[in-house]
Amino acid sequence: MNQLSDRLNSLSPSATLAMSQKSNELKAQGIDVINLSVGEPDFNTPEHIKEAAKKAIDDNFSRYSPVPGYPGLRNAIVEKLKNENNLEYTAAQISCANGAKQSVCNVILVLVNPGDEVIVPAPFWVSYPEMVKLAEGTPVIVSAGIEQDFKITPAQLEAAITPKTKALILCSPSNPTGSVYSKEELAGLAEVLERHPQVVVIADEIYEHINYIGKHESIAQFPAMKERTVIVNGVSKAYAMTGWRIGFIAGPEWIVKAVNKLQGQYTSGPCSVSQKAAEAAYTGTQAPVEEMRKAFARRRDLIVSLAKEVPGFEVNVPEGAFYLFPKCDSFFGKSAGERTIADSDDLALYLLEEAHVACVGGSSFGAPDCIRMSYATSDENIVKAISRIKEALAKLK
Image 1 (cartoon, rainbow, N blue to C red):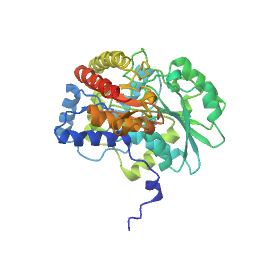
Image 2 (cartoon, rainbow, N blue to C red):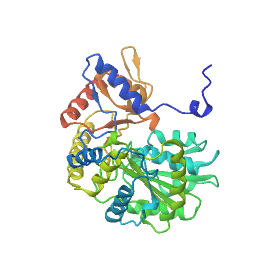
Image 3 (cartoon, rainbow, N blue to C red):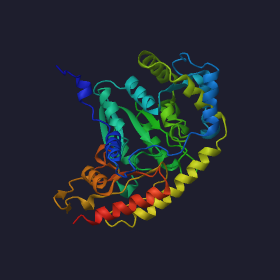
Image 4 (cartoon, rainbow, N blue to C red):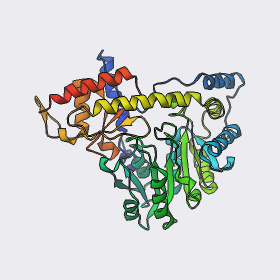
């Protein structure tokens, strides 16, 4: 039998989750694997947020919540957007979901028809093109290499837009590169988009608070873009709440209403207790966010300085998130014993088996010459991991 849908057969499995599983299998065999493959803060959720969740349980927040989320949480998000981003929204323009991942997918599913094009700058987060395929749209990949800090230019954007273009997915700070678009760079892209009013921007800002260059800039700040931008954000990265699964969108009401209609049919509102925890995250002290950001900044400096000493790696300096994305194509075609490295996925597997360090090859991020390392781990692990990587790569001749 096994007659799976064409929709499912068109999808690729998540490379990051696959790599994480492989490293867990080696760990289960008693091997000391350092996992740099997962995009997850290694901190615990701050205490005041956990307390709010415990209180929510005691207060019996255990029933279905409204599909777009509790008014208390949506109002807290409205205040956050006003105070931190200088952007005015109403609670009716906010819809909460089971993580920012569902938020992105919701927006794509309500906008994209079969054959519509969605521009996806590369390197991209692995799920963007797959979500577009799920909606029977066509991902249009626009590549930006390390020499331009992995950021697309206005000219590249202009060249990619056709009458079929429905949306642009913009992730800043970026997963997998850590690149951050400046206000000037966003203004350049906004100027192009003004000439193409049919294009909606899906602005994935989940790494907003993990930023090493100052203030986060959103493309929604430009007057001509506000009504055409859907901001996607959530609590997972800034507040170390990945497992709580709360994301949100802020955008034009017609899109938010459509997302509520869609979500009402396939998941309903997100977890009630998690929503009360997220509300506390947004309304409570922001001190833990800054503490974590400082720790990530220190680790960024550490991993960049160590990786620059690895012969054959080409390294840029990421300005946000917690990823390093070195170019490693100088190792392609080299061998160690019976083993020859064909591409970055091969290299990632070699590093897992030889160095016992889990990274993710760049192919699934649309950058086959690079490899992604997450430095959301201890300083000690970073030092040990890069040392092991350096030693393993030295064996390739």
